[in-house]
Length: 226
Image (cartoon, rainbow, N blue to C red; front, side, top):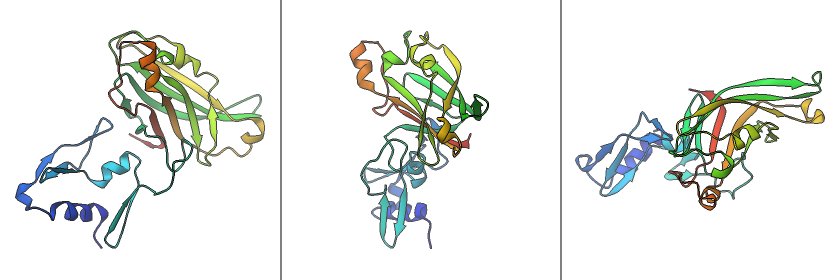
């Protein structure tokens, strides 16, 4: 049986001769895709692998190609997550203002092992032309999502929210995320780091910078590395 990628290509090109197609290189979340885009009769098509990178699932059954899950949106970090720029550990995600790269995720504990969690080390750089901080640009917070769907908050997130950075400047932060004592005994692996950003806050504060995407929030999948 043909792969989904091949099936999509057949569907896309069946309406016009191959000679009428115009191909383009494709960049997804700042990364060059191995497969390009193609325009046929004014319609542009991208490979399903690009949609998968963006967190959009797909399935092919018979002659029906389904994108997404068909379910209503759930809480952030669930099967249907908020629209975000997405990448892996080692990827640099850039939303027009902040460049963020997660470097490592390590287990952590305190109080003699009574509380367990994770330490996330990340680079946080100002990619705008002004001096600013996370709070005044709409950064709401950072959440660590575990494989069982539970969420851990960082007690040290203020380092990211309040640290003013000049144009092109950056810092490396190590943020600690701990579960309470009861949850520590059944702690599951770290799955995603979510950086929630509300672009409306940036407009309200008057900071002379702008996000280049309407979905500036970031989602880093911690199970993959680039």
